[in-house]
Amino acid sequence: MFKPRLPFRKKMGSVIYVMFLLATMIGIVGLVVLLAQVLAEGAPWLNWNFLNSYPSRHPEEAGLKSALWGSVWLMGLTAAFAIPIGVGAAIYLEEYAVQSRLTGFIEINLSNLAGVPSIVYGLLGLTLFVQWMFSGERVLLAGAMTMALLVMPIVILASREAIRAVPDTYRQAGYALGAEKWQVVKGIVLPQALPGILTGTILAMSRALGEAAPVIAISALVYLTFVPAHPLEQFTVLPIQIFNWTSRPQDEFRGIAAAGIVVLLVVLLTMNAVAIILRDRYQVRSDT
Amino acid sequence: MPVNLAQSEISQIETRIERSESSAEIAELEQGLQVWNGRLERIESQSPFSYVERGVVSAWEFFTGTRWTPILKPRAYGVLPLVGGTLLIAAIAALVALPVGLAAAIFLSEYAPNKVRRIVKPVLEILAGIPTVVYGYFALTFVTPLLKILFPDMLVFNALSAGLVMGVMIIPMVSSLSEDAMNSVPNSLRNGAYALGATRVEVSLRVVVPAALSGIVASFIIAISRAIGETMLVTIAAGATPNLTINPLESIQTMTAFIVQLSLGETPHGSLEYNTIFAVGLLLFFITLVMNLLGHFIVRRWREKY
Image (cartoon, rainbow over all chains, first blue to last red; front, side):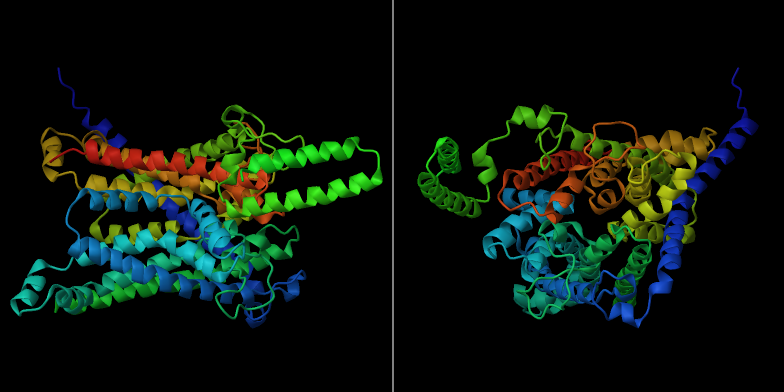
């Protein structure tokens, strides 16, 4: 005879439900604990002096000026490489490319590149840019080119999504008015896709901001007491400075590392917030 | 000129210096040695693939050796300790992230009301956007001291702490991709099961999860691949001791952490020791590439068609 055992199954159901709920909380709790720990350790060290002085062996004097400006430089240069090439590639693949074996190959490669470990990009940058292009000099430009390679797949994927989301009727309306292909792309598709492209770009930049491994692999310096003045100078960035402080034995440097992390996270979360706001704002506008 | 020619010339001169008696001859030979060293350096700086040409380490030694000491004498170039360390960390991370991530995905897809999901999902995704140096710091200064209460003889740099934190880091990767897969399971399957009298948990675990299995497995593979390639977290928290062990309380070194260690050090460019990072990097690239291809393949081939 069939026994439904419904009360037992329902009880099991609620037990397992609680487990699902707890599992969802683990990540959130982890995030909260991490942020609280970093804030608690870092807050005492956060002041104007910290932002505006160079790294030092003495904890009281240590600051992240060179790393902060190095990160700003690296972001700017990375964006200068990654955005035009990435968006250009996305426009080509979405609007111009005919489905062929070549485009299929490019697509498979793009999705695979997004999964390549960042340290491998660092080794590539070390060989390609530092050793070949700049004959052994670990300059900002080489770092930016390495980072651009790393984030390019993200920019391309996000831009393609955004371009694909523009309805075809818009394009046809453009053609009906007698516009050329490029005029349609420039005047109709790109403005419509811009919020999506911007969102993807900002997220890619925030990835580049947080990455330390590729920059370490191209041997960026960890101890620098000047702000780079042009793209052919040596540099250091925030994550490397934090990494360096983390590996110091003195207890004070733990607090300083935490303070550096707070700065890094504030910049990152601001960028992410900007990305979200941009997306929301433009979405509303294009709906009305 | 091939690198090994210059090398053999150098070693010949070196033996002649050792055997020679007169100081004048030694001085002359040393001059010659300098010239050849300069040539060797120039060749190596020109050819970034010199480590391939040199062929000093046999593939057999590289893949089967159980000692990895490229910068300490006696030198040994067996990559297994690095691979073992990498897999140990990835395994601990997987033990955390796969069940937790899957359970979170089931909750988000099958239980959570839309409002909750729209808040929880982005919050979880923040986890994936936090720089990995931050996770390294967290593992070293918070999780390790906490675990020391449980395991007093644990080392400061250890695989367990790094693996656990890595597990939390890759939860969103599993939960987000798995949730997408479960979301695309059509409601008719769920309704059919409810009509047969199944409870919600039974529908989730016995209908939705099997139907979305290809997507779930792919998310597992991609998350593990990410754990294998992760660098800063393991460099900071797991140590720098190439160590073929399955004891998570010990200090180990991963492939990525080794590359960082050598990049930071004083090892001269072009030397064999230095070029080991390319060999290790290449191996790492192939491992992650195969896993990513496998992930894409599973999604494409075994996706249930509705």
